[in-house]
Length: 398
Ligand code: SAH
Image 1 (cartoon, rainbow, N blue to C red):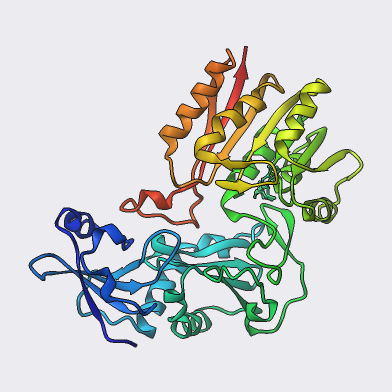
Image 2: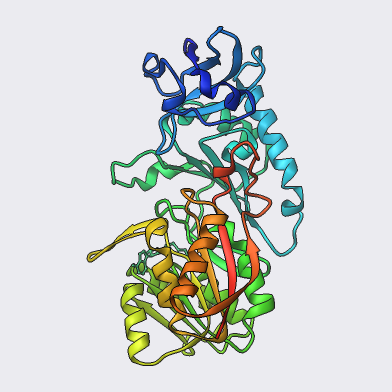
C-alpha cells in the first residue's frame, strides 16, 4: 500500500504494547507526527529499535490507529483480512445456526483483531461500519474478504468517520441487490424493523440482546414499565411480549414515535395499551412526580453524552442524578435497569454511582442481575475499555 513508517514507543508504554495493548495513543509515541496519511502501515518499535507490533494509522475519536499484527513478517494484505474475518465468523457459528435470532455482530473491532471496523449481520444483509479514514483505505481487501467468506443479499456500509453532517444515502450501498427497507429481522423470536439506508442508527442496538431477553423472560410479567431514552422502543417491545400490563416509552427525538409504533405493530402488540411520549426524560420525571405516577420497572439507557435544548447530559457526571429521579418514581420492590455504554468509567465506578444515589435518597437496594457485552461483541482482556457496556438490575427497597 504505502511506505511503512516506524514509530518509536515511549519507554513507559513499551510494556503495555508488548503485553498486547492494541490502540495507538498519541501520548505513547515519540514521533507520531512523522505519519500523516490515513491508512499508513506503522511499525511500533521500542527505544532500541526492536520490533513490537505493526498496525495502521487512522485517526478516531479515541486514538490514532490500531495494532493489527505482532509478527514482523506478516503482510497486511487480502489474505490477512480473510484470515481474521474467517476466524471471527467461525466464532459466531452458533449465531448463524440460531433458529430465532438473525441479527448479530460478526466483527467487533479490536476484539477480533481489526480495530476501527465492525460488521453486523441482519438476515442476509451485512453492514460494515468504518470508524476512520485509515481503515477505510483497506476497504477493497475487507469487502473482497467478506464476499469470499459469506453469501449475502447485500452489503451496506456506514462511514462513521464522516462527521461532515451530510448523510449521503447512495454511499451506503456496496454490493448485492439493494434491500427494501425496513427489513424485518428476528431477535430471540421478536421482530425488529431495520433500516440500513437511514444513517448511523439502524433501529436496534444489538449489544442489549441478553438484557432484552432477561426483561422479557424473567421480569416483565404483570409490570407497569417505564422505558426512558427509548429510541425505537426495543426494551418496551420485549417487556410487552413478556406480559407487561403497560409500557411507557420516552424519547426526545420526533422519529421515536413512529418507529416505536412500527416495532409494536410488527410484533402484533396492541398499541392502545402503550404510552409513547416524545419529550425530555427529565421533564417526564417531573411530570410523573407531579401526577404521582409510580412504576414497577424503570429502564435507564441514556447516551454517554447528549445535548438537548436546555441541558447537557454526561453519563459520568449525571448518572447519579438520573438514578435519583428514577428512584423517586419506582415502587417498593420495583426494579431499575441501569445501563450505560460509557467507556470513560468501569463497572466499579458505575456501582458507586448507584450506591450514592440510593444513599442520598435514603433507600436500600439489592443488585439482582449484571450484564456486559454479549458473545458476538468479542472483547480482549488487553483492552478493557472495549468492554464498554454495563447493565445492572437493581431492586428498590425501603
Ligand atoms: N434505549 C435505546 C437506545 C437509546 S439511544 C434502545 O435500547 O434501543 C439514546 C436515545 O436517547 C436517543 O434515541 C436519543 O433521542 C435519546 N435522548 C437523548 N437525550 C434525551 C433526553 N434528554 N430525553 C429523552 N431522550 C433523550
